[in-house]
Structure formats: C-alpha cells, structure tokens
Image (tube, rainbow, N blue to C red; front, side, top):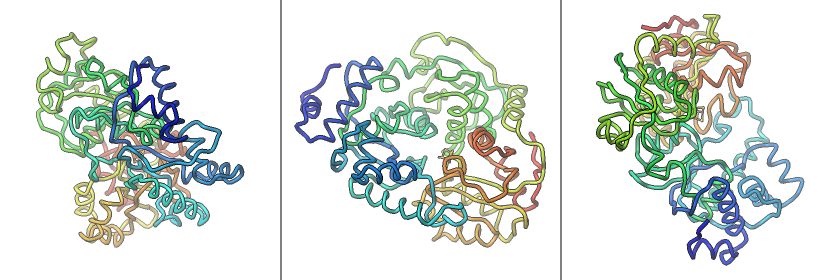
Length: 428
Ligand code: F3S
C-alpha cells in the first residue's frame, strides 16, 4: 500500500504508540482488502467497548483500565498503549443501555456505573456522545462525496444512498483506528465505480407509508443481497423516516450498503447516471405479489394476537415520528398487559421533553428511551412473548435474538396494539 508522508510518520511511531498501532492496523486491513492507499476522513461513527461487561471484566483483570479496553478491542493490540485524543470528528453509535431507564431494562446498577465510567472516558478522548444509530438525525450530516468511516448498517446505507457521502460498513477496529489517525482504506464504496447501480427494480405499486418503505427494502435486500439496487417508478418522494426504514430493512434481509432512487437520491438524477451507462445485471419487478411476499416473510414468526410489548424507534425515531405517535397516543391509556417503549437519540429526547411528548407517552403508560434498542441491548419488558413493531429490521432480528414472535405493521397498527393489547393489523 502506498503511504503519504503523514501516514508513514504515524506508522513509524512519530505520533506516539497508539497512532502507530492504529496505522499498522489500517495498513494490514487495507492490504487484505486490496486497497492501494488510504483516504482522509474527518467523520467517524463508531462504538468503543466501554460498557460491555465482559470486556470491562477482562480489562480490570489485566489492568490498564479503559486504555486497555481500547488497545485490545479497538486497536487489536495486546500491549496496552495510552490512548490520545481522537484526530477525526467521531460520534458514538448506540450503546447497550439507557442509563435513565436501567431499571425498566433490567440492567443492574453495577452495569450503569461501568457505562458512566466508559462514557466519561470517551468524552475525555473527544468522542461525541450522540449514542445513536441515526447520527444524521442529530447533526452529523456528511455532505455528498465526503469520505466517512461509519459503523452500523442502517447508518451506512443512509450515508451512502441518501446523503451521497462515502463509507463502507466499518468494524470496531477499523473505526477505532480511523478516529485516531483520520484515515481509512480507500476501497469499496469510496470508489466511484463501486457506487454504480447493479440491479434495476421496477416498482409497480404505490409506496407511501413508512411501513410500505420497510417492506420494499426488505424485499429488495433479499433479492439483491450485497449489490446496488436502483429504484424506478417511485412517484411520491420519500421523507427521512421512509428512507431510513427502507435502508435499515434492505441492510437486514440482505447486506445492501448503497442504493439509488432515480430522480430522488443525489447520485441518480437519472437512471443513466445511477448505472453509469452500464447495463443492469438484472431487472426485477416489485408489484402487489412481491409486496405480499415481503409482508408474509417479515410476519413469519407471528402466531398469537395478544401483544405484550410494542417497540418503536428502530432505527431511532425522528422528532417527526415521535410527534406522529403522540397524536395517536394523547389522552389514551395502554392496555394493562402491554408495554410501549419508543427509542430516540438523546438529543431528540430533550426536544421531546420540552414539547411535552415525553409526558404524553408517559401519561399513556409508555416510555421514551435513548441510547439503546431492544435488539442491540437485548432488553424487553420481563415475560415478553409477542412483540409489535413498525420496523422490518427489528422484526427481522428480534425473534432470532430474543425468541419472541413479532408482528410488523404501520405505526398506527402498533399503537392500536399497545392500546388494545391485540394485533389487528394486516396488509392493506
Ligand atoms: Fe438502531 Fe437498534 Fe435498529 S441500533 S437500527 S434501533 S436494531
């Protein structure tokens, strides 16, 4: 791999042991990927193993504190090095707990203490504590062409497809090395050629609601796996929430990290631009039958109609989605046997508090939570067997991770289930 002078200096240890380890990791990683060089990045979204109990146990046993955790789990270094402040602007993705609602989530005070310590450490080294899978909802909005190093599949596909910024789905180690060096291997979706469409998806039905966009994404992910779909036939421009749910679903049923919508997304002013003049590898139709197929697939675990738990906010809810949910909840009361948790970034929750939305949710019997989600943190109300969700991504993962049945539908159907304790949704 060709290294620039500043990269060579870091590799030679001229900027300290931690940056030397980070650069060594990036060079090994880049060479394994066939990257010819690195590229500058000043936008990293990453997780640091600050709060994971087994990681902290390990670190405490061997000594070295949080620097040992970072060395081992973010820099792949058994030798403990002192971690300096980050070079690249770095935001933390979701954590595994909401410290303000630890008791509801069944999280012990000892874990909350570890979380607080870990968060203080990350703050000290300059990591921005956004603690969300949707950094683009709370101020981290990279511009078209900006090179990023992001983790979290739903954020990655949004970054590439919707914003036209450039990232691969990074791991904890490459993102950890990127934050210390401001570099990332120049391969994959950093390169023009890899961003071009591969599959044409002719959409023949109206796609309007957020749930519809989730279904479309779920179907496309299964159909194209890790390729780059280009959607044609979208008549109503989707908003942030719809694109967010679409991408999250496509990245769950498949491994989609980039997509285009002709006439909508920034690198697809036309179909020709989306494909870069190349012919699609395949053309697929999405009509009523495909929509039903996706619906049945997402709902394949659901049998019992009595709903114990409604979870909203995967990916983390926007303020607009909270506002919509509150209009359905205001003045109502949840069914006695059903819980409602809504997840959002903590920055949005502050506005929700001021707008009175947190109070509306609370008065109905629900909780507005931050920093976490059920699938990531493996947290649900005790005894949950049947869940209702408006996220195809969460419906994909939660049954596999937690062994529950999952109903997927619209936000209104989910809130109806929270109020009545029963699922009465269906494909309309
Ligand atoms: Fe975010 Fe959890 Fe969904 S991390 S995308 S809310 S699975």
